[in-house]
Length: 171
Image (cartoon, rainbow, N blue to C red; front, side, top):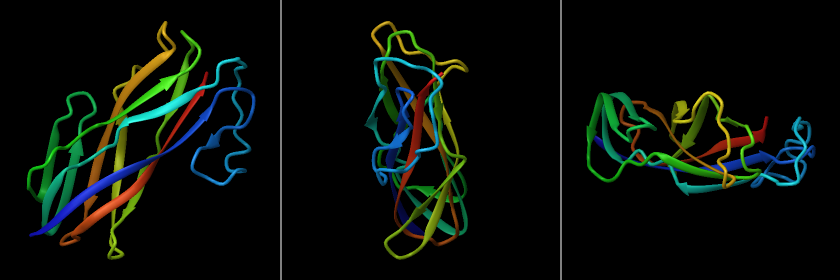
């Protein structure tokens, strides 16, 4: 068994006006072709309150998965994976903008993570606890949680890091 620690950062993209959606951590011209259909005087702001953390596990030769449920925060282990403790946390994001406005939140299908030793792992099945038609509240805020499944190949130890792009735009 080998130890595995995981850290996921975030890349936030948002569209709050007819201007192009922009990734806050990307090159200035990134995402210039994506345009919001809604015009509003209140731009969207996205803040990461808590980063997704799968905790510490040991992975055997057969590999396995670590899943974090966004609704309950429960961590499930599958395959040749043993819990080594630590706190597993769902990601928590706060969106601020025009009160009552409908928004669309998009997460990628998969995200590849890398360790300092050149190994990789994949997070798949990213899901939120949002309703099918999310709206900002009367105070202009929407808080949501998200989780996913970390897929680990056998004996791939390390401290894995990556970025999850979270895109939010007005409907």
